[in-house]
Image (cartoon, rainbow, N blue to C red):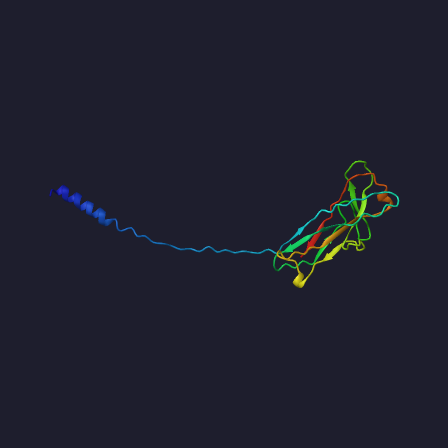
Length: 175
């Protein structure tokens, strides 16, 4: 073997043996997961539609009704559902009528109405107290208060000229 061949063979052997052996392996890590359940409630807001026939001696409209739905996450304790006087009434108290603004033809006055917590329309709706204990609302067990509405039969409403009226009453749930 010539000296050059010996050097080439030695170099090849050194390269093959000298690079070492590639090792395979694994490494592990962890992922930390934190979940926070935020106490929360939802309030489903229904639409109340009423009809009123104004005129001297007209009888009050039959109370309209709609069912609200309140659901809460576990551990959330709602206390009350408070209804304001509506978008067209300032300084409202349960002793006053709510006002629905004329949105139709004819112009004229707002029409007066109220919301009630009873079908007989005797208790003006201001605040509802949430059920407690086994009846407390949750996402699987809804609190479903029925809201009643009636147009007031008074001189203002008997003289209305409009055809369509609208109001937005805000219901605020405390929990």
